Amino acid sequence: NENVTDLRLVYGTEGTLSLDGKVVDTKKKPVEGASISTYGPVQRVVVTDASGRFHLRYLPSGVYKICADKITAKYSSTCLSASAGDKDVSIVLKGRGRVAGRVIRADSGQPIQHFEANASFGQVLSSNNDMFTFAKKFDDPQGRFLLSDLYVGDVIVGARADGFIPSFAKTVVDENETVSNIEIRLEPGNPTEIHGHVVTADGTPISGAAVYPGPAQDFRSIDGMASNAGAIYTDGNGE
Image (tube, rainbow, N blue to C red; front, side):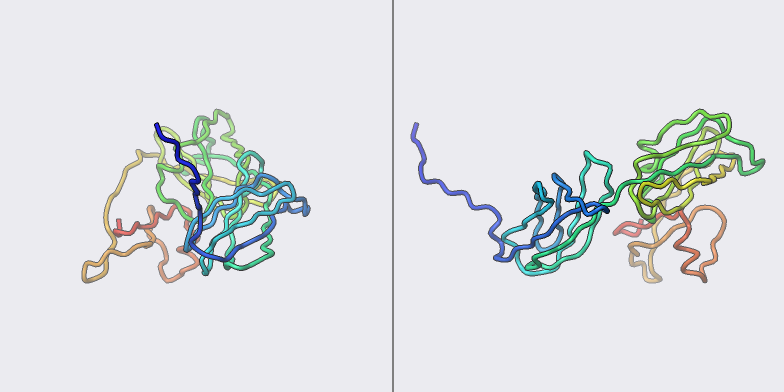
């Protein structure tokens, strides 16, 4: 039953440097309440004030990845690099966009009425299953779909339907714009899973190797390989 007095809690004293900046939208308007996350020598999370400014304190020297996001508003997440000690980092949050298109049969070109579709931000998929975890269901005689509130930048759009093999298309989403005329062709068949490892000649696992389903690709073209939206990349164990 004793009272402890003069207790002092010290948080975040790993370094002596700071990193300051401001978050605005594309119209130069400050974004209040944006979450700022740092990745580097240490991790921090702060929130911008009414003027859009943020202040990161007690940082050790080094380069940090700074990401800004505001989940409650229709902004796209933005990341950039900055160094501890920088005083005027500017981060611009862009709005979101939309993708519209059709899902059709690959063998006949006829629309598929009942299907699921979703979009994944980035250039590659970590897993086909991840794509469809939160997929939206569509019921349209013309096979039409519209996906809204998408982050700007590279986006992979996927679709699947009963009795068909999932397929994907890659596009680029712009702020407050709709990418239209996306066409996803589904081959009739039953989806299957293939598990394996990619290793060197001496058996060392290769991380980040691209594995492509479907017809053989022209591996002489790096650009052609990178443009394949259905690519899956191996993990740290080469799996």
